[in-house]
Image 1 (cartoon, helix red, strand yellow):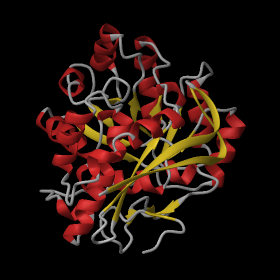
Image 2 (image 1 turned 45 degrees about the vertical axis):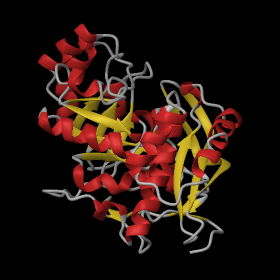
Image 3 (image 1 turned 60 degrees about the vertical axis):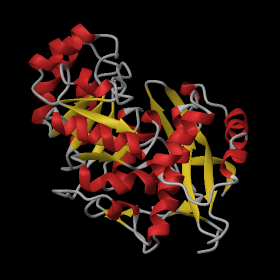
Image 4 (image 1 turned 135 degrees about the horizontal axis):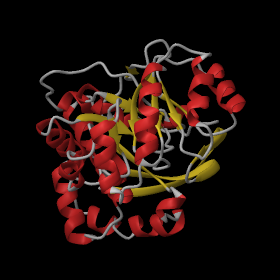
Length: 346
């Protein structure tokens, strides 16, 4: 089995601002696992997000150093992939583990002749649309972005220090679509409680991560008094975080790159269900390789934020897309995740 790393820089359609900063492009790594007998390749992705301390060159070198461990392998299940990483690189960054995990899942499903999502039995599948994200900016900038991209449900980034209620009131004048609000740790408990009532009246469905992860007392206060459900993001990064979130949140947002792949993400979904937490899966700014991987989870989710590839000026791949009328996924005919780099053979 051959391991190949592709380095890319993804240009954004518009500058993207959240409370962590603003960016106009996104470096990313594509991991390719190739079954040399069949010629099939599985693809995974790790966004090189700067505020997680990731560097494309160093990460590519780290992954390339693992190639000899894959060379003698003929087959590799997702479970075997994680066992291999635990043996060869137990401290591997979760983003890089995730890229390998998704590539292994993609190849595994292709070898079974199935779309990846069809490999997982789901007792009560949901039809879950993805939202489209409106990043922070002036109110007029945010209105312009919303009007330029009509969509059935939006995530609105707030918490940048401006008048957040005024932003939502202004945006509501341009669309009837539901809003998810992401405060990106920018609020206090008092603000969360005070904003929740008016936001609910303005068609907001939930508030994502209003407080900093270390403000557990404030989070419990907000949880007790918020009119709207509260969804954990920065407070829920790994499997160990799910149980802790039950005391301060109504649901969790799983970032597959943060927890290390689809295998741990599905365990997090199962645990959240056992705790009566709602479940969302979010993305980083990724190409269609990363989005096609996480989109396989949609039947298991209450909410989804899988717009990463839609935020790009130019994609490097094709795969799962989303119907602009419904926000629901459109899966390609290809097996596995359905992702394919442009220029690659079918």
